[in-house]
Image (tube, rainbow, N blue to C red; front, side, top):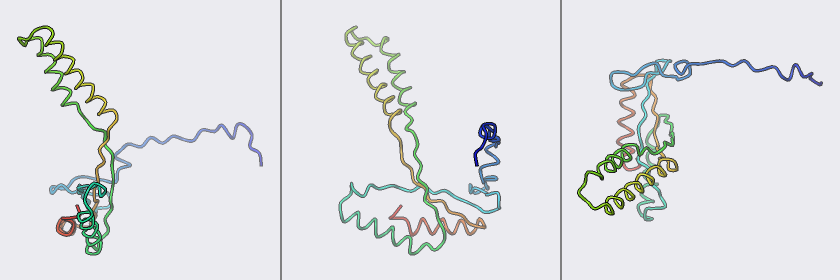
Length: 166
């Protein structure tokens, strides 16, 4: 009924798995499809996202109708995946950093150079805040098939029937 302290403090065995052992993918086919370890094929299709609260009622009804039609027409299994990514502003920050470094070589008065530098530092700070606080939400449809031909057909069907919805 009661366990002694030695039994309680037993540590669980830590198993160190490599990513290759955990991820169910074996390779990528010449067509760009993911080849699963069981021999099936998989493709991730990026979806266009729409905020239904930001469109008018007619457009929202059209989108909802096309989305439901898509699910009536597509008869094979699909999976929707939603992923959040951190926003990257590295390129923009590098651009403004180069501009900052060039300010001293401009033929401006010292006052204008300082104003220019403050403005550029403000831009860099804004970009850093955005990078630390904003994420992008991305949506994907994951399609699986036993053969490449079947997967290509399913992708074609999704692109045809989901054109308006996605």
